[in-house]
Amino acid sequence: MKLLLIEDEPAVVSVITRGLSEAGYEVSVALDGASGLRMALDNPSFLLIILDVMLPGMNGIEVCRALRKEQLATPILMLTALGTTENIVMGLDSGADDYLVKPFKLAELEARIRSLLRRKSSAIPPQQESTSLLQLADLELNTDTKSASRQGKNIQLTATEYRLLEFLLKNPRKVLSRMEILEHVWGIDFNMNTKVVDVYINYLRKKINKHSQQELIQTVTGLGYMLRENNADENTH
Image (cartoon, rainbow, N blue to C red; front, side):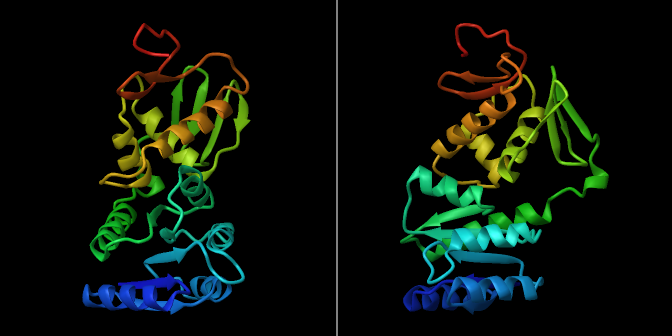
């Protein structure tokens, strides 16, 4: 149960390492971004990385992007003192799997870690997927190549946008609440800022509507979102 903590505040390091060690985790610590990056790349045995955003030299966003550029798939839990939707989205866009706003309780940190590790262990290997092609109308997603297209034209997606589109395509014509989307796309089973879902839905809409005027992602007022062919009624738009 080896974890990597990349954090420069001594008090935070002390609380996290002591608490997680008592919970049975083996915690290694890096006090700056560059050191953390090297440790993460040199030691693929880490099950999860806890990464602070505000670090000396190389910040957490830069570290996260560098790790994902190197194809490191280890779950990353980002710590931030800034809880605005924009900052959260920036962290997720850089490749983080979840975020936690400071100050936080140790019990919540442990819950987030368990959630991310469950999500990692329950991931279905590509060869076990029932189908490699998901489709609705002229929108297609290939789960083998992780590529999307509409009317035959390629759509460039971030990792989070891909997971969101995959979830929508696996549940066509079904109303999905924001909490359902958070649980399945981010693996979060407790209250997270649901505005993050709205931000990513808007990102995805812009990309999949670039080559077509037909709106496939419907907003169901007061309930959530639905992926379907465009035959909206008075409850959707």
